[in-house]
Length: 222
DNA sequence: CTCCGGATCCTCT
DNA sequence: GAGGATCCGGAGG
Image 1 (cartoon, rainbow, N blue to C red):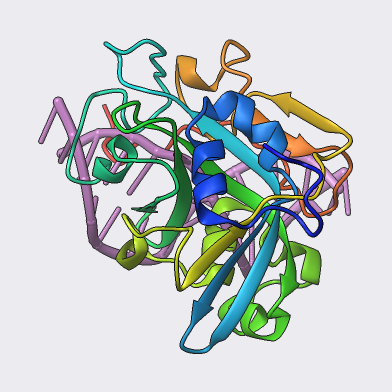
Image 2 (cartoon, rainbow, N blue to C red):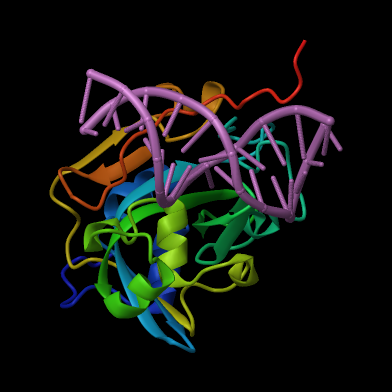
């Protein structure tokens, strides 16, 4: 990757080649990249400040018990088994969407969950989509918040993030201070320090606050 | 500031 | 059936 390109790298072929690698190596380099979605209502752009890497199925080279693909292909996770640069968007908790960018060559079933970012364009539209946010830095400070601010839903899963109405620009240079730690909200062994695959820009105010996975209420008593 | 519970339905076993 | 790669508002310190 030619990091000296003025204004960053936006050529889809170059970006897709970059995304063909291991998401754990891509993660610290993709921080600072700008993802844009041109919807009918207008564009919104987010500068990524926090991502998480998710690897492959249990019988693969890099199994990941925290990944949606751990148990193998399903209807939902199908895009993760496809080529890099495409979106994997899933619906969770009955009300939220979260978006990933598929990484690795087709078949690896790895991806980067877009956990947080700074809205750098289309702040008005992002605010309309996220009326609950109390400050601009909170517009995309969480995976469901980021997806909401960008207007992403399961209608977008499987779509190419490197072609209209989307675009992805890699930063002019890698972020100076990137740190890593265990992934947020992942229950079981995949959420431990054995899998320190959450990456974020140190001290960036838009990074989400860490929360460990919380056990659910049991609806049925013993 | 931190902690906690409820919301709400799709997905896979 | 069970539970989730979450968010938000309210209560308490």
